[in-house]
Each structure stands twice: as structure tokens, then as C-alpha cells.
Length: 344
Ligand SMILES: C[S@@+](CC[C@H](N)C(=O)[O-])C[C@H]1O[C@@H](n2cnc3c(N)ncnc32)[C@H](O)[C@@H]1O
Image 1 (cartoon, rainbow, N blue to C red):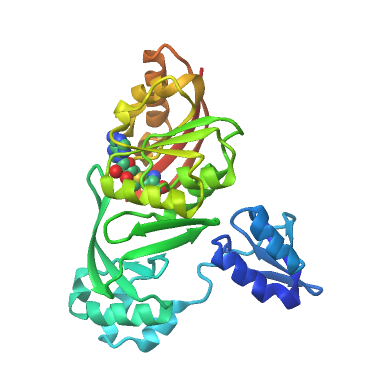
Image 2 (image 1 turned 30 degrees about the vertical axis):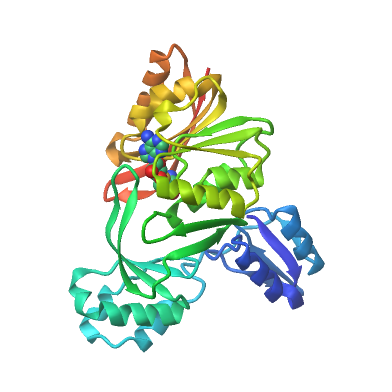
């Protein structure tokens, strides 16, 4: 597993640098031995960050596995100690949350309605955030918009740092799924130098921006239909200095230019298969499609595979399934998967 190996005397500043840049792997334990500390990393540092880490004596290593851990510390214990709600309700307190910069997103069950203000206060204090949103309705509609209630604070616009990429967004009005982190990291380095990439569902740049920051595509054409998400897509392009690599396009990807891309990203769920014929036409003859689908477990892996193969056949092409990754559980019995498919 990837880690930064650093003299133990410099472990803390190295860990802080990794945290700031969003590459600290919080789910694996730090390992120390014989004066050196190995800090698990989510991704390879970019040259600028690596130079700063090297000043601390750090070097990249990939020589062992590290022990899994649920959280960095156990904030729930601190929250329980601080919170003022009836004892019997404590077991219903949220055990997971989304932390996006200074904004915390909590799912609070109905039974805790009367204590939502107190819950927001205690979580914000322990997790050191100043704004708390309650996720009341999941993600809805074509724009994949969250339904949120503001419980504490007033600034819902935030900057979330992950894998050395800065994502600006209004967390009350736009989604950001922490559960997709591995896929965002995977997409960051998947394209080959000089490729033209079409991102059909760019959102705020979930895949386009990491790819532009970490790879050398000739260009990424990023389509987004929701004007608010498009506004943040533009902001994130500027924030990460990738104006030369990404061409943002406001509108329906069904109107995208055809016969231009070597790689197509289809990061959308629900009705993604309906866009497959268009994806086939966006490709410049052959290339790779990253096809996302939410699929009942019992229909895996056949349904998404067959859908892609059928769309390829209809377009007079062939589809070779290179791999299928499970991204996360989407709802009970339903999985969010991504297929890498070679089209020729
Ligand atoms: C929110 S993203 C999906 C999230 C992403 N897979 C992730 O990792 O978090 C999907 C985006 O596709 C956009 N979208 C939906 N239909 C579209 C279409 N026909 N053309 C362009 N964008 C579309 C939505 O507005 C939304 O911003």
C-alpha cells in the first residue's frame, strides 16, 4: 500500500501536509519502526507537494499493508460526552457523516427531531465545523440535487480538498459523495497523455478536475446541464489552474459533439444506459467508456454488461468488458458499479 516514509521526528508535519492536501489515508493505521514512520497515502503526491515532503525527509514507499481502522479517532465518544439528549436516544445518533471543508452533513432520524439543534451543536463542536446541514431527502432529480435543512451556521459554500484537488461547492444545493472517493482517485490517472476525453455528466468536476490535475490529456470536454453545478465546475477549473485542459460546456450531453473522444466518462446513475448510444457516437471510432450504473445485486454483472454490449452492437461496434468495480452500496440490495469497456 502506498505510504510516505518519514523520520519519526518529522511525522507530524508530514501528516499535516498530507491532511491539508487531501491525500492522508485515514482508514489505515500509521506504522512506526526503528526511527521511521510510514503514513498511508490515498494517492501519489504531485511534484510540488512531494518536494515539500522531501524537505521533511519523506519518500514514497509501497512495501507493506497497513492495519484497517474505522476512524482516525472515535469522535462519537466525545460527542456522547458533550451532548444533552435522553440516554435512550443516544443509540440513534448518526455514526457516519459527510465532512466537506467546514460543512458537516448529517442524517438525523425523525425520532431525534426535537434535539436536532443540540445534535448539530455537539457534532460541530467535536468535529470542528461551523455549518451543519441535515440530509432530509437524499439526492433527487436529473440534476442530482440534495435535499438539505440548515441546522447551524449560514455559510454552505465550502472548499473540500481531496487528492490535491480543491472542490468548491454549495453543499446545500449540490451533491458530493465521499463514497466515490476511490473512483475519483482512479479516474485522476487513468487517461493516457494526449487523449481527448468527454465527460458527459461533469457536475462540479468530480472526475474532470482530478484528471486534469493529475494527467496530461489533450483536452477534457466537460458537459453539465445544471447551471449551478456548471458555475462551480468553472470555479473549480480556475481554483485548480486547469483552464488549458478542460473545456466546460453548459447543456445536455445528448447535444455533445460527436466523433471526437478517445475516452468517455458516464458518471451518472439511474438512466445512464439511455445515454449509451450517444457515448458510442462521441467516441472517435474506438476507445474506452467508463459506464456507471446502479443495479440490483441479483442482476450483476449481466445487466450492465449486456446493456453496453447491446449499445455497441447497435452502433456497429464491439464491446470488451475490461473490468467492473463496485463503487458503493446505493440502497439496500442495489449496487453502484462502474464498467471500463473497450469499444472497437
Ligand atoms: C452529480 S453528477 C454524479 C456524481 C458523480 N458520479 C460523483 O462521483 O459524485 C451527475 C451530473 O450530471 C448532470 N446531468 C444530468 N443529466 C445530464 C445531461 N443530460 N447532460 C449533461 N449533464 C447532465 C447533473 O446535473 C449532475 O450534475
